[in-house]
Amino acid sequence: MDGVILINKEKGCTSHDVVNKVKHITNEKVGHTGTLDPNATGLLPLLIGKGTKLSYYLINHDKEYKVTLKLGMKTDTADEEGIVIEKQEVDSKILREENIENILNSFLGKQMQTPPKYSAIKINGKKLYEYARKNIEVEIKPRQIEIYNIHLNKVDTKEEQIQFTVQCSKGTYIRSLCEDIAKSLGTIGYMKELNRTKVGIFNIEDSITIKELEKNEDNLTKYLITIEDLFYRIYNEENKITLNKKQLELYLNGVKLSSKNKDGMYGIYDENYIFIGIGSVQKGLLKREVCI
Image (cartoon, rainbow, N blue to C red; front, side):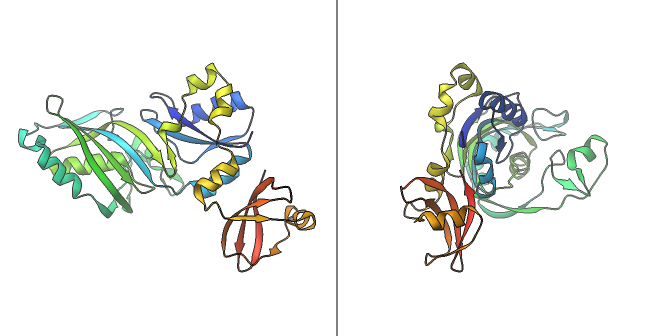
């Protein structure tokens, strides 16, 4: 069984927990294209079997999140899992929809963002959260991110919370974004809830929960995106190359073949139009990438 399955991760479990459960169900090698924090929910694409070889093509995708930002409180981890280290009164003017929308819109575009100190980014061989747990201060360099779209969904004046949807580039830390938005609003805040709804071409509407998968293992076949299907979701459907028996033998043995096709990725087929895998053409040479 080779391909991708989209899991709707529930709150409280780690991405590693989800991977292990799918490994147990499929008895296949399983990987992911990017983790979700334990307190976050939503879309977690998992690569199964030979689908794990596709991770290189799927790790740089943009993402979409639905976010709840709690104002007037700051935690040491920038989310609800942390210890509250500061509180402030939230002026009612801050919670006006027009004011919030203006601030959210100010975050559109490319910008530099400082990752949270409780993150898995490595500095000198250690993850940032390892330094943070020992109260060791290290320099965290800002990174360029991009916010493509950000939309206010709801303002809860009683709970002093705002809910918004954001579409952003790979590497964007929503915890840092929440703190930055709160600061621009003139207060403090932390990320209370996070739900990932899109990862590149994948949408949460096409996902399944682990409980549903465990309840009926037939759902695995139903929800599995094959390598062939995945390829044509990413690339043009006309990107196909058919190889005769001799060419295919050389290709499968790793020999680069001459090709008149344009540089790019291609679905590879045999003479019977059976999908063999994915290849790439560079400077007139067809190279094997992924075979099923």
